[in-house]
Picture (spheres, rainbow, N blue to C red):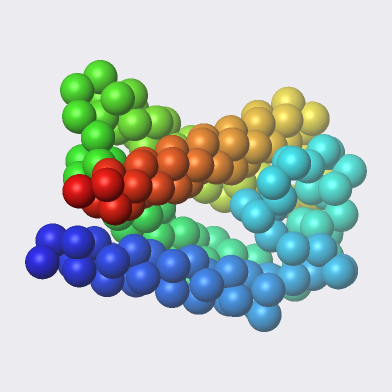
Length: 167
């Protein structure tokens, strides 16, 4: 029963991610460039300036409005799904470590959102190298921590499946 609920929660998180990514690609792509949040390897001052300069006023409003609101709800949903899976498949110190990893992901994602929001508010002309480097660092950290969490979930899921098969 609980496993079914977790599967549904995970499916909801996956659909929310697809909707967020689809919204970003449809409405926030500017000058052939995607949103700063989605750049796995980060971005530099020139890339951030080019992207922000290419955003229309409507896109800027969407980025700071609807996209930012959705990008506040989605990480919490994803974190909840990961925490529940980790609670189901791990115990003791491993569970604590995985819980901390999810907390780090959530903190990195929310900090990244705040920093990118600040970059957008500054606009391309007033950006500083330090502001962009800090935001980019949090973007990269978010993706690395999330990859580690997904990797751990995959390994734990495979272990649980193998244990069921042995019984």
